[in-house]
Amino acid sequence: MKPPEPRKTIRQLIQEYFEAHPMEDLKHGPVVDWVTEQWRQQGHKEPPRDPWRTIRRLHQEGWLIKVRKGVYRYDPELAGKVSLDDFTPEQKQAILQRDGYRCVICGKGLADGVELHVDHIKPRHLGGRSEIENGQTLCAQCNFRKKIYKQTETGKRMFIRLLELAEKEGDTATAQFCREVLKVYEKHGVNDHIRWER
Image 1 (cartoon, helix red, strand yellow):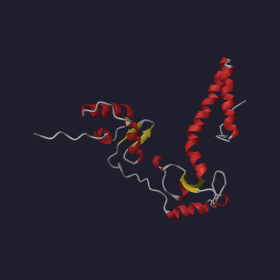
Image 2 (cartoon, helix red, strand yellow):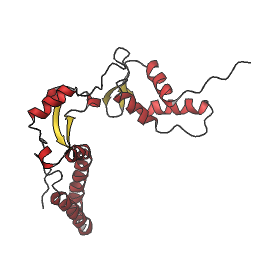
Image 3 (cartoon, helix red, strand yellow):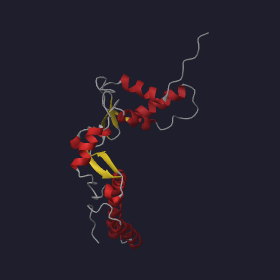
Image 4 (spheres, one colour):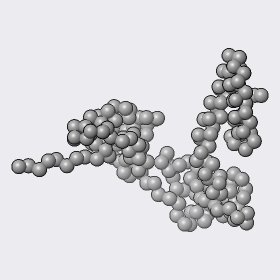
């Protein structure tokens, strides 16, 4: 009697799908649907957990190319060849020295008791290279803020649009709520480059 075929992981199923469709720009929806179907055919009662996260991880590891949001391509010539290397110790030293051992955002340095990080300006998973020109010195706090700024920028723009709509509709309660939220952004100096009219 032949032993049963071993079950494939979510990652293996995703790779199998992309390998069967090389050089095609594939939306993640149909990939997830196919993986879910294959997963269930293997005898799993529950659907696979977050296959889209595995797709994103494969992109971050250099196995897939992100064409645009939610669309990926498998290129057998490039798969796995994207290097997500970090700065060498010599590069880090050169960047710190170039930036005067100070955070390029807030200006604080080691003398101020802050921890300094050497950061990629353009992230590696988006194609940024580990080159001195793509490096910057950030304190730990500004480095953390950099990671959340995209989310806070989106939030601030949403509250500005909601405020404009509430004012247009005469919804004073919602308009007041939005103004108070936007004042908190101002109070803490978050996303000051995005202006709103009072």
